[in-house]
Image (cartoon, rainbow, N blue to C red; front, side):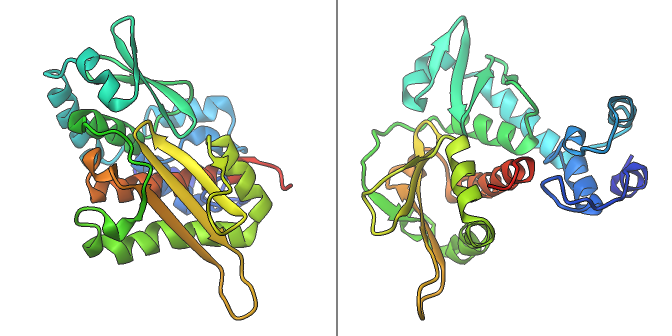
Length: 259
């Protein structure tokens, strides 16, 4: 079943209660693996069961996941646990990502409570395969200051900073609550009252800064990284990680009641 076929089987009410706000983009996200049918409040459990058996996900993501899992088979997870900032016990690696704990097995299988999207599987597997070695420096830099970040800076602004700014503009209190649910902590070390530190991965913290609109100055979001971030993920993966954060924030906001 492709996206069009799935769309025809959805309620097609465009109720706005899922993270995509409408049924067609929701169908596309389910097919891509970025959303789960359980996010639709109008689908009965038996309908979801029937649909899941017919859904065909995008092949490229699964192929990439399998490729990364093959590489992990040659890695001793216990030997790199400290480098990754994880916890190794009972023959498995445990890691926090966006406020959730994930369990990674030697063959690259990943388990966690709730739905695991392909993007988070890819990120975790890539993070493990890279297994960079560095102590966090505590010095914050912009995306463009990271290795090869300058060439992707405009894309990062468009795909990460601008969408988060729009979320703040639409519902600032709810966005603050959503960041808290994802594990972010407010900090007073920056020249704005809306400054958050969030560990996207154990060795990849970011600072999210939001300045509301004031007089002639437009609203602005700036995302900073520890200067060691490019030791653990390349800039393409870091951008992918932040795009995933945006999706997670949208999902949390769609499930929350207005504050």
